[in-house]
Image 1: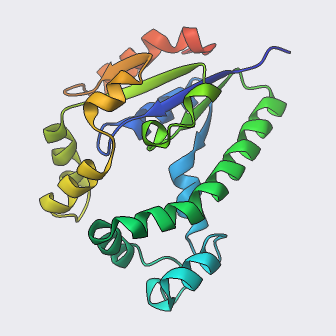
Image 2: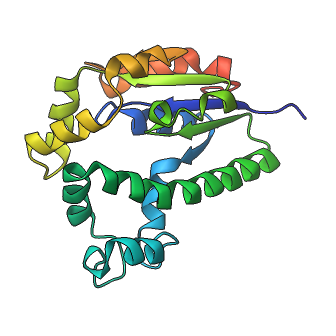
Length: 205
């Protein structure tokens, strides 16, 4: 049995990366969502919660036993070292579960595994494990407008999130394939994805 194509998928907040992941899943890819794994680890009784409470204190834990995301967001924006410590707790757990899910996808026989990784470029460790890197790209203004439309965040908060991620130029420099999603409708985005999936061993059906 031939090994599946390992496709890294990344893009800044509001780029449409999650929509592209769903379209690839619809075409038959197994999607390993690093962000979802990280969120699960910080939910009630999540694997990261004991270490988070031990290091940051109980005031960063909700009454349900989950991470208080609003408090943590404010802390890591004001103290870069706090972000590094949080990532040192969560990232090893994400890496292990990512490996587990990829192994399961191989056992099932998926021809393509999509690693949906928001911090793919920032981590610096992923490229050697991937056959292709697909970057979903758009301007920062489009990012901001999309996030404002779907969330309760203020513009300044969204701008801080974008500033904390890899620059657009850095992300594009790591890309094998770029999908420009500035002004595409859902139908146009689906068409663009369908134009490239054959190289990943997928089919639009």
